[in-house]
Structure formats: C-alpha cells, structure tokens
Picture 1: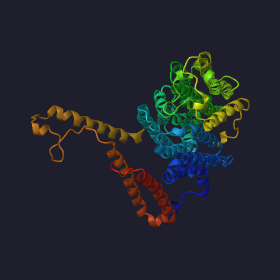
Picture 2: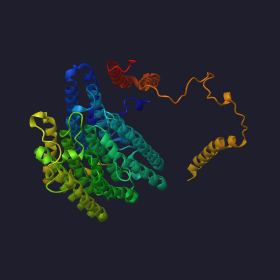
Picture 3: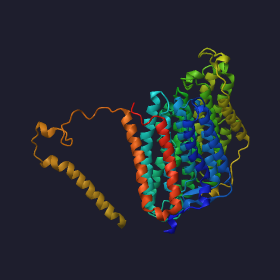
Length: 480
Length: 117
C-alpha cells in the first residue's frame, strides 16, 4: 500500500506550520519548567510562551496570498485562515501580561503550556475545512480550557470549570450528532462536499441545525449563553480574557466558513435563518443581561455575548462585504475587550481581582490614567466614536442593510442603545462619585509595565482602527 | 428513504427489547425476598461497607495517569503490526509520539505525580 507511507507532502506541513509551532512550544515550556531554577520559572515560562505566539504569528503571515488546500481538503491555508489565526494569537499574547498570577508558582508552566495547546486548537479551527478537523480543533481548544478555568484557589474557579466542562460537553454532543447527520446527508466529511452534494434535504437541515446549536453554545449566543457569566466570573482573569477572544476567533472562523462555503447555494439562506435570529437575540439579550451586573467580569461576559452577536449579524446574507466587516469587527472586539480586561488586571491586587463594580467608583480621581483608558474601551464597546467599535458597527449596519437584513440592523441599533446605558453607568461611577476606597499611595503600587504595555497596544489599535477600517479584500475567495 | 428502513427496524427492536426487560419481570416475576437475596452481590465476598463513600482524589490521579500510558502502549500495537509497511515514516511518527509522552512522563514524575502522599 504505497499511499499509506507519508501520505502528506511538504505543502501540507507548511500549511500547518503555525499550528505546529504552537503545538511543539508547550513541550519546551514544560521541559523548561523542570530544568530552569525555581526563581526564573515564571519568567521563563512567560517569555517562552510569548516567543512561541509571536513566532507562530510571523509564520502564519508568510502564507498570505497563497491559498491552497492541505491534507486532502482537511485544512485550508490562506487569507481567511490567517486573519482568524492572527486574532487568536493576538488574544493569547495580550492575555499573557495578566497571566503573571496564573495559579500557584508551580502551576504557571503547566498552565501556560495548556494555554498554548488551547491556542493551537483555535488555530486549527481557523483553517479547518473538514468536519473532523473542526471537531479536533474544538476539543483541543476546550479540553485545555476546562483545566485552565480551574487554575485559581477560589472555589468559584472549580465551579466554573465543572460548569464549563459539563455544558460544553453537552454542546459538543449536539454538534457531533449534527456532524453525523451532515455526513449522512452527503457521505463526506468535507465542507466543500456538503456544498456541492445533492444529499437528503431533511438530514442536511437537521444536521446543520444541530451543528449551529453547538456553535451557538460555544460562541455563547442567546439562548445558549447561560454558562458564560458564571464561567467568566469564576475563571482566573487571564483565562477569562483568553477565552473571550481566542475561543470566539476559532468558533467564528468555523461558523463563517460553514455559512459561506459549506451549504448548497439554494438552501443556504433558509438554513441559516436561525443563526441570524440567534444573533438578534444575542444583541438584545446580552445587553439587557449586562444591565443588572455588579461584577466587571460578568458584565464583560454579557457584553461579549452582544459583541459576538454583532459579528454574526455582519455575516447575515453571506455577502463578501459582510465577511470583511465581520473580520474587522472581530479584530476591533479583540482589542477593546482585551483592553478592558487589561484594566481589570491593573486594578487587581495579589489576592483580589479588581472585578467588583464598586472598585470603579471614584476611579477617575484615584487612578486617572486607568480610568481614562477604561472609559475609552467602554466607549469602544458601546460603539461610540472615535473608536474602532463605532466604525465597525457602522460598517456592519451598512452591509446588513445592503444584504437585505434591515431588521437585523434595527436590532443592532436597539442593542447598542441599551448597551450605551450599561457602559455609561460605569463611566459615570468612575468620575462622578468620590466615594469608594481611600486613595492609594502611588508608591504602594508595584509598577506594572507589561500590563500597561498591553493596555497601550489595545488603546492605540482601537483608536487607529477607527480611522483606517482596513479589511482584507482578497479573503473571500480563500474561504473555500 | 429505503436505506433507513433497517435502521428504523433496529431502533424499534432495541427500544422494544429494553422496555420489555424493564417491564416484564416486574409483571410476572415472583418475589420472595430475604436478607441474603437483597444484599449487593460483590464477587461472592460479603460487602464490608457502603460503596457511596468518598475516595481521595489521588486514586483518580493515578487512574488517569495509568489510562494515559495504557493508551500509549495500546497505540504501539497497530504500528508494530504494520511496522515494515510503514517504514521510516512510521518510525518517525512513533518517535514523535513517544517523545511527546516522554516529556509528559518526565513532567509528571518531577512534579511528584507518582508519589503517594
């Protein structure tokens, strides 16, 4: 059997290069954790992880403009994949400054290795064009995350991990069933074969429905969102930040590829209507849920539900323009969300995360820079100028109206109106109230250059992206 | 939908059989319980305690580690059978597999995962 030996060529491995970098790096991190002296362990683990993520980012960019199908159609290299891979790598990299306190001292190495493997899953999902590759990437992403959620001393971390494990596994079950039915409809696990196949319509509808339910859960879209606030609240801060960007990037890549490339043209619009309705529900439900929150992490969880709703709404009608704007908004969301989490990290002290909303009262007087940055990120999340959030929403409105989904645009505006109240409330508390804890002495705080660097990068990106809405134009042909 | 008829029949038989196994004994069986009959059967040995107690988490840790390396050993069999057909490619694949697990093994060992504290 000659086909059995080395069935893959160099091009296949080249397509997978960024994934391989991030897959091998954790082994180095683990070895370093064993060999490096105790005092240097945390620093070396963080440095190696950051290095691996940066190298993977550079390697991934090398493939720009050379779309091709690797592993017999299992993995798709090209611009579409690269955009989502870069977002995932960026999310992982910018949550690292928060990871200084990831678990106990002896857990940092293992934790960061798991974080890299989780990122590896997201990178795989970004290029997955086969049901099996999708599932492989998703499980790699999720399994590492279950452990990472529990990496904190608080009992709520274990609660978060258990909830996430059980609910996420249930969703995986739904998705797997959907995949089985999709396979049954066409007899192939390739997404491209689903699009061209003339299989049973009932199986296709059932399968894509179950598949979308699974992904709506992973993307925490209403009504499959109830796990999100609890998990976000319980998980350690760096992991919450990581989860809010990296899992979304991976899952959105699959959802976009499924919507654009996997469904027969004739049925696609009808089969996808539920996901647009779910997006509309998320835009309203996420923002309404955020109204009553008293914890910053829970609030950002609800905010994230709405934000992902905006991204999915951009895909409505599966127009090329919609995909570009969805990608633009995803990148903008990554920056503004990680920026907001960065500020939460700055306000955290050793044994207390700065996530209670009461900690923000009077912040404008105590820590003007942190408050100013937080205000900027909240304005961006609300979608007000001059931020990337505003530009992104404007583009999404334009594309969804253009695609004939005016009602989604209307829901988006209504959701934004609610969200402005949510964010304005915090900004008001930061500046108007002088209550809250006594002013901290500047000297008592440890300088945190890395966290400020992360926040600064996010702030600059959110500002610059507001005026240069660059969205790659040559990506759509590379989806399939 | 003819290819699915056997599936439907299979499903029907399975549901019917499972339902019958649950319901029929309750309807027709004679019940004459005594103390010995009501006991949990445990390999013929008299049960010493309730099974609902709590185990130290270390049991699960050891069990998990065992399963991981057990699966590793099991993965060698298909390669061993097809070793000649797979040639160098197979050897390299297995080497990569063993190196990954070896690093995991070293990590667990150094972190004290095998110590019964």
